[in-house]
Length: 226
Image (cartoon, rainbow, N blue to C red):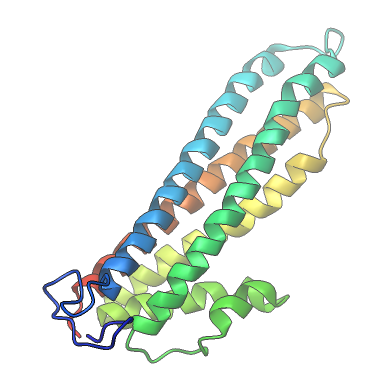
């Protein structure tokens, strides 16, 4: 494997270039994978905590009656969760940038063939309509071509990536609905809390599934001989 800095050949069993001392590409790629993995884990933990807190808020609403319902108090209780979902969105954006960087390098290192050109690793998230189906196809191609999987293994990888992408889309939809919903009545408040719990659950599940994919692809590419 050539060194990215000086071009000298780096043996597969060392972590630094013998000529210039630069980190080998695999070590650098593993560091990016670990960073993405940890960010996804923190996002899953944050979303899970939000969902559990909303479930605790749902208990008094379930036993409340419309006559004793205090809309102002419930709206005040829900306000921190709206801020928490904003924090989750910012964290998701930061994690997304790191994830695209990781996917770019994973695409470069995977043997192929790929159904999309390398530029779609970035454009696939930005182009309307295409961003609904290009990212999971790219990730699937990188994973199964890196592992040289058999058909049964490809089906498992496809199911996992499909579940991840479905959770991502549902989390986005439910989070936006939660931000736009109100608590003017008891029924509205219950519905808003349920939306928040579902949004948090799908965020946590999407982050957990993405952790699995990142771990598997990074492990395969580090172990793959040049």
